[in-house]
Length: 295
Image (cartoon, rainbow, N blue to C red; front, side, top):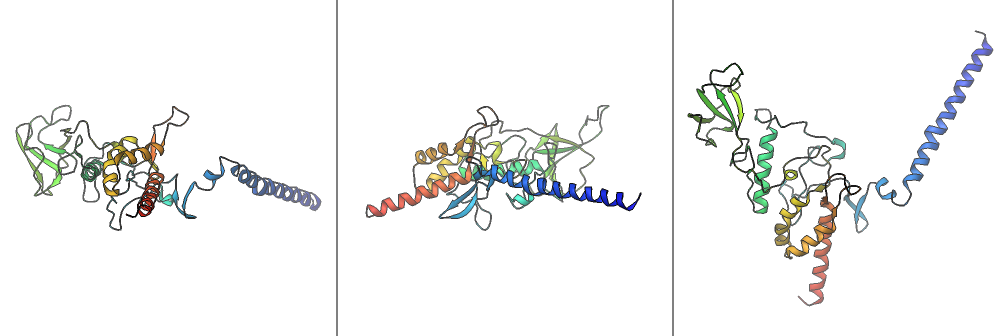
């Protein structure tokens, strides 16, 4: 290869680099930015920010926590669903817990998904004055799971139990059932129960009062919506904490309920951040009205 051909090839490569840089590095991003500024798209492209007095306080696309500095729910606000993204709704740590329905046994390293669900259900029920009972949960808020030890049959099931342990109830807790197949059930005193057959017990709470989205996180950990059922559960508590009528709160819930996408995809959802800001705005208007009336 002579020097002239080498120069021509490098010149062609440089021209291609410059052309592609202009098209893909400058023209294309500018075009996309201009499209994003069209009416109806600009708000979403800018992050769907929610502002109060000119200051951003959140995004309608990202959930947030409504708790005090100790993590306790603020009763005057609707509560969001749980989040597994960082410390909660962290866009830089968006994730799910990656735990599934078979994660039912607590270990020294971490709490099982089942016990997390049971604990959250009890807490949500206590906050809103309903029963937190649900299937496969004990009354003290852990997974209702037994380890059954004894000889096994050809299918691997324990045929004649000799010992039964409530694996998620650490001693001195009282087991949620006293006996299983005629054998006394004892609490988990730390002895090895792994050789036993793991048996979840359905128990009571077949129709839980606390909805599923109150006890499980979304796949992204950023979902800003809760179900209408979870919102309805919280209405009376929010109304009492704010000193307004439940009807006023329900009206705002209806106003901030988004329907199914395109009318048939997904489920209706209530945007928690927007709803809570509307409640604050209503409170300010009522306070001004009372001042105008001299009380």
